[in-house]
Length: 106
Length: 112
Image 1 (cartoon, each protein chain N blue to C red):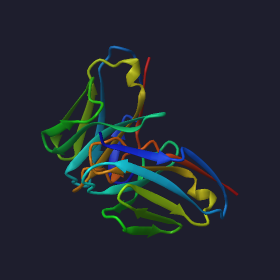
Image 2: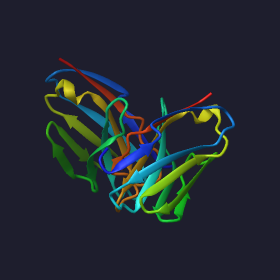
Image 3: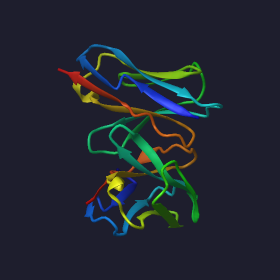
Image 4: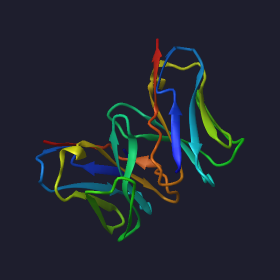
């Protein structure tokens, strides 16, 4: 059964403390992995699409990478405004991952 | 969000009553989706549409039906609401992939 698992469930960082979020998947024939950001009370906002192992995408302090089994969302020198829940999904009718709730403390 | 709206934004109803949620897009995207989001479960796909009058079930479709008579509108109906359908419902759209690119603001539904 196709599955997407995110870790950790929650992450607290000091402002400026870099870290990574993980999204592992068990999907045959991956056709795309997607990252989103969700703020409380709002719908998810699309961040990145990755299609093949080795691919990387960047946006401000965020960089997403992809291997054959997992994707990482690296956050460099985070700021409080990066606090949100980060979700990943793959291009199938599988559920989204349950997300990582990131809190960046000033 | 720009290009996609949901109505109503909040609704409280009683068990056994019918409920219809509306999603409207101005982007002319082919795919439209309905998800529900619950603590501990993440986003789960209810139904999706790949064109006018073309719909298919997602993983949690029991108790829900959908209709799409126009490109811009996708309706989600709970024929007889139950307390287990209390949730936040998101509509989403995409132009070419089977994973949504833009989400609506959500509808918070409470079934008493």
